[in-house]
Image (tube, rainbow, N blue to C red; front, side):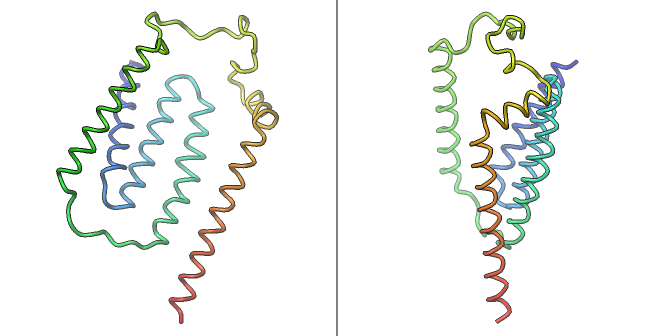
Length: 178
């Protein structure tokens, strides 16, 4: 049963990602992205990575997508008229499938994908046991020691984006009132 659920949620994620890419309406695209992120979170839950699943829902499907929807509704862009040219769509899909097949062949040829399935290394046999733990405490310890600089850079970039959105909204509102 879990294998069937995993395949269902993986297909749901791929379908939502296709909706995200192919939709012309930005709000529909954002809703497709939310559905794709929730599908990834469901797959995390099925893989017994509960902490990552909860983080996926809280951070990405929650906070980041609320920010995206706020920006989309703030921009107030109208839906452009006209349809996609079928020739361009077919060329894009053909390029995507050829590149995907090339990447899969490259992984298989390079030996990155082993032909014999092996299980994960148990923490007792690992050289670095802290990398294989699933507790939130060890995750937090690594996040605030080894990965502190990338965390601070990501926080700074989010702050700059938020200040930019607020300044854009103030500029558009002040010109609309005049």
